[in-house]
Image 1 (cartoon, rainbow, N blue to C red):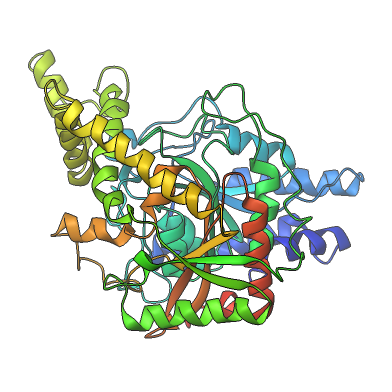
Image 2 (image 1 turned 90 degrees about the vertical axis):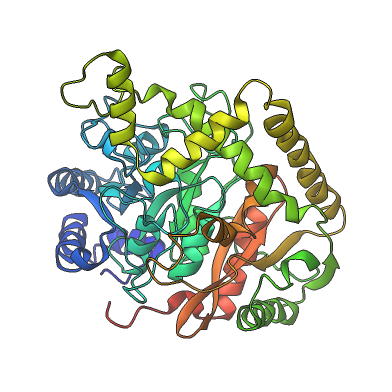
Length: 483
């Protein structure tokens, strides 16, 4: 049962091949058996999951079942869950039980899904390797000495290890697409504002976006049908009609124009990685798509702009974590200053403290115009590059990462080298565009991802392109050797 996709599970439950309780029990047993080596879960909600599964089976027996009734998923531990730990992978929130559900969580609960628990992540979503979690690093199921990518590494690893068929995730600068690529699964980052951010603990409010990690594009479409939509509780949510994302999956892509940015195929991308991406593009040409070389001339400015904007917003968002209003509180503070300093110093990890300090500096008097304002102006240039490109092409494609998964500890001593892991993904978040990663090959027996970039609110076209590629190839079916 654990090898089934969300779509297959939904059909099997409808036909009575097995019950949600049987499936949930099987997956919980796999988590107990396998996750000790992977560390993808922070909290396993076995009692809650079995209760939800039993309720789903009762609804199905009464004839009240729908697509998602009894289908198991898990949530990245950045989404608030009523009565369940929501830690953001941090000591600062290691004992925080949210008093409400995030909108995304509520929507899956209302749809009848079963939640197996909360998934590990880089602390407050800050990282590209899932090594900064207070609860320990996550291992890549393809090679447990290597990282799964971050910050949604727990989500990607759990899906790759067949512990859960699908998981929620978030993407601030590549944190869905990058781990999906490194773990050989499918990741979708929707348009900014397409999915509610209410109840999703903020890192950088103008960049964060909820999304999906699944095995297939079809499963991503099924998750999007639940997650997408306007939320009046979220001021960044867009009031726009939501299509049925499964309805366009099988559309022909003959005549689709694919843009290949010259900036994505240079020295930053190894020859082996480039070959796998180009092989994938060739598959699209076989299906009738046309390929056109394009330029995104401000791509080289994405990382410096991002690492001013994101830390600035992070320093503002995390100011509330002070040991008084929210978060960890130090023992026996001498005075108020000692309370603040020690609570934040002990509660945050090194990467979070680094970004808070960078952001506080960029926002300080005398530097705001020179750094934060200038970075926002650059952001507009990057967005304009994409707007101009989509006048001539339907979808943009390229690599997700410059290399396959690297070994744990390999880049932790050099933050700049770690930041460069997101060189191909960050621009989308600055522009607010949707993007996907789909498995497209392997280098040294490690997965490689193909990045698909769409125009605003064009997730349906991306899912269609990804689905047709997965019908023509089998890279998304590959499984780690010992799983």
